Image (cartoon, rainbow, N blue to C red; front, side, top):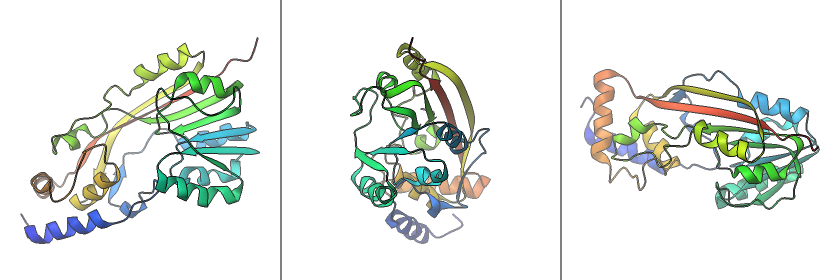
Length: 257
């Protein structure tokens, strides 16, 4: 190793102690980067909001992305969040701006606490969704836009830690038929694959702390050997790039007969 092992461990432990709240990875600016996507989710969401009178943002995190789109908000904006620290942050940020922030558990099966046809637009960025419930709460002619992380995301990084993807079948092939079965028309499906790149192993430590489902029970103390293996790879090849993939699905609810 080019660096002293004790020095590296100390650096990684400091990364592990850094705070993370909401869904804000700005701490890793310049140290974690994705290859560019061929679409812009925020841009498309804004276009759809411009044509809607109401919007639901599912699993809003700390409201980071929704706040980016504020100039395009329609008259009624509702957001859901379940994780208590994010829920508190979203309410602090969004409620003074007139957004209703609702504590809702979002899964592929659970119902949503909203009325039939309540929303002209439902947005979903990297959250689970119940296709039948999406169809139910959309107004006739309403749109659903989701950007999803592919189920095999960073499987090659996980392998260093003896972990495997928990949802490998999270792909358009799984969700498009569900949306169609719920009575929604598919407007567009887009897929992309590229790389998620880190400049240093400390950035990976912070990242894994923030996304604990990728390597369950990850800590620097329990995964030292795996981290040193990544450090060796970095020093030999200069490369810490791993599989990344997203997809978007946009649907429309048919107008009532």
